[in-house]
Image (cartoon, rainbow, N blue to C red; front, side, top):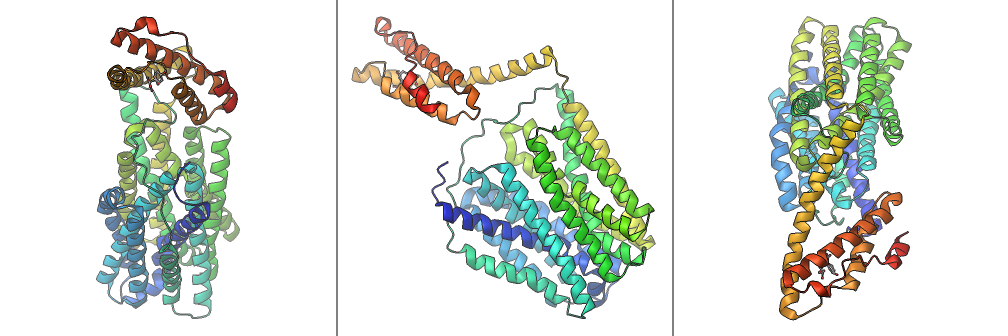
Length: 501
Ligand SMILES: O=C(O)C(=O)C[C@]1(C(=O)O)C=C[C@@H](O)C=C1
């Protein structure tokens, strides 16, 4: 893949992009991890501090639209720089502010930073032409490492009476380093080719498509809500309800993030082994629900640790990304818009969950965490609905329906191809050139061969191209009234076939 930047530059770029997500992992949980200290510093009750978290959702929401456009117009690097700068303001501001209104605005900055980083990063990886699954996994791993390290640091700080501001300073310092690292790094050229809808093809009825669309949009909310509610309340639940020591309480959060890193690997391997996405999401959501119930019902330290790990694995291992992939397969031609819609359902969760749970926490911390059971059940309902809507029985009829859809697309593309040949025919008529250009045909066959991913299919597809170009010649000759000039048998250069096999 020609990305116009060297391998070492690609490495430096990827490193910085993942480092940003390490910082983002810290940013995601830092307010919740310091909730009690911040309540003291801001002279506000914990339930009000929890509400500040809703600012993150509020900041994310409009920002996805703005940064999506900016990333395409002015480049990915600008968005990433803005994202890092906004996060820096958040971390530094939070270290020093004693005012809850300012804290709310800073939380909005963090939300906007999240959108800016996402808009610049996912697009950069797409431009690099790397394997989307691999880069998504590493982005998620970066976040999980941040979510793992921070609670350990906070627990250490609390034990040793170290100022809470230092935990924010870690994020700020990592950002300053990364801003400097990124200055000389070159980004790949933006790839703006139209999406031809590569990927699995889904051909289902309108009603099923509507159900799947609603279900997957809602999953954007439930998958995000399920995760963030747990990260926001588990530490307080552990100290207040389970009567854990502060250190043990922070360790639950670290168990969750180790679970989430493990989950990323597990999901990655499962998808590679061909486990279908629908049943995978149902399995993950059920596990998350069971783990949550274990934390809420059993109330024993070891069980809470194991359950937090299991919850991280199942709720935060990348199920959300799997849901998004299913959604994108349903609408392969409008991937940008679908990503925006899905992410914004996530933003709605980031905004509303802290408000709802903040209110519930006034009754009891346990009821705030219990609300996650409601979200888990809702999540289970939507993934089952999506699976039922998208599932197709293995049958002759269904496969043929799928082929009909593919044939429709191929026909449209073939028509476009023949129309493009019209101009060539006209130019050849003017210049008196022969219709047949063997060199060009060899080139086309070689290029097609190189772009076929499944090796077993390479020869067949190259043969089809031989036939297409033979027809293309016949078509041109008919147009030019030179039919006798043309052989309608394919040139089919075996040499090209050999070159590519
Ligand atoms: O590129 C050309 O010169 C064409 O006429 C188009 C085309 C094709 O269909 O791709 C058809 C006939 C030529 O032998 C080579 C290629």
